[in-house]
Length: 197
Image: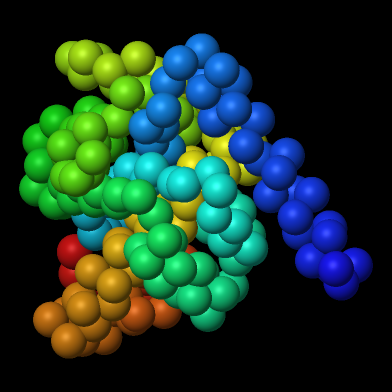
């Protein structure tokens, strides 16, 4: 085995810690959950829930923020092909303004769980707890860098949201959505000053 692959495999194995812990407690269908779009000025919040087969190795999975766009898109395709199930939940801008971003994030996560084709028996969630969900769960701070399943969910959520935001480029020309993805960059603030909210 090549040295770099050995190193990757070691990271991969280490990041199953939480999944293995709860499998030992009798849970089998463990879903990792994460979101994208909590910090931007524009666009929806998108959550993903991913149930992985722990026997299948998908190299390169880690916190989506630590991956280049090209790498993230490549791994996204592998996740979509090899995961046991993937669910996506989207909450639009109007709803975010109505119920606030935290509640909108929770709603997107619940929608992602409901979108799974396999009913999970345990949830690993990045830094959040979901009320009114009758499934055992564990909230993990910085879960996208500690749990393989949550990291996979972070990649799916980020890619799905980026695709939505990029489509805004033709609807709202001049704002640069394809570049900044709705985040508060200097370019985005200048566009708002020039063209309005």
